[in-house]
Length: 123
Image 1: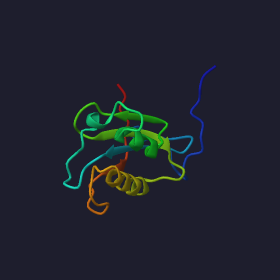
Image 2: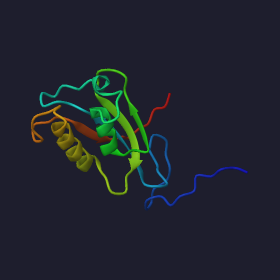
Image 3: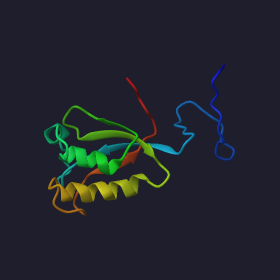
Image 4: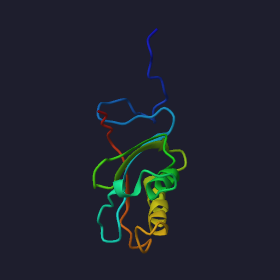
């Protein structure tokens, strides 16, 4: 039996290469956790424990799939339910959390960024 990619596309939209499609309202985001000086936070320094800063950040994100880059870039790749979230609202939540965790000092001054992904690369 062949599997089919059967969904109702947006009006007048046809599938094309180079485009992300979702049949269940999933969204992909690239998150960069930064301090108030626009410097990425090395998340390896904040992992490896239940209740650690990284653990709390991942709980706030609540993604279905999450990958934390194993370097000093502060990046988190996430696929999550996109029904009630967008990049702007997720960024506000994460900036507040970064400040609450002591990784930044002011929400307005924090440079944590969230961008909705336009591509996905798997290795």
